[in-house]
Image (cartoon, rainbow, N blue to C red; front, side, top):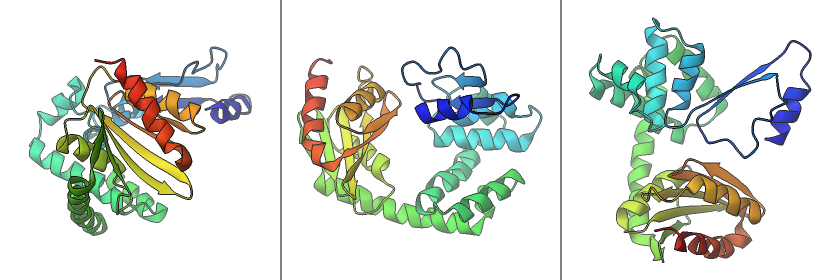
Length: 258
């Protein structure tokens, strides 16, 4: 975040930045003296809704559909605005179309594909009409069920934490953590993958008293990494050599929460 602040301050006169995010901001952000920054933040709604409210055209059907797809993907589809738009359509169709985007982008992350997808969607093409996206979505679904089976067979529980590691297919950390919660009675689930000495960690919780965003930020910083997210869904990266310390600190932190 310090790099972003330095970049904004280095902009030529007359330039400004509109920063939109639905994640809770770090402590002290934005700085009070950063007058070139228009900061838009609200919890409980999707990033796409915040963008739509800032830049979208109320009468533009494509803008509305793209906003709703994003809200479904962010699992923030219960806002009044999203509910109003969904009430005008067959919501089963909208959820299906959104699913093609969410699932399809797990298996295809190359920039050329993403750029083409953005162009096609901006032109008003429904996701289901884009063959490459549908094909990628079907691959993701096949891989997802393999990950679910792996979690069922390999999840362990330590105190209040469900742990699953060495996930066999990349890109499924969050889903693995979600499913680890479904398979156990743990309050928090951690899915771990390690790449080049760095542990990539997805965290999920079903306990509203637990703030994973706060835990991820504090613990990752203490362990030489970084992290954050939402109260019930967060992620962090730390040196893999410090995983045991992380689990110990998480147990200590959770011990004070009912």
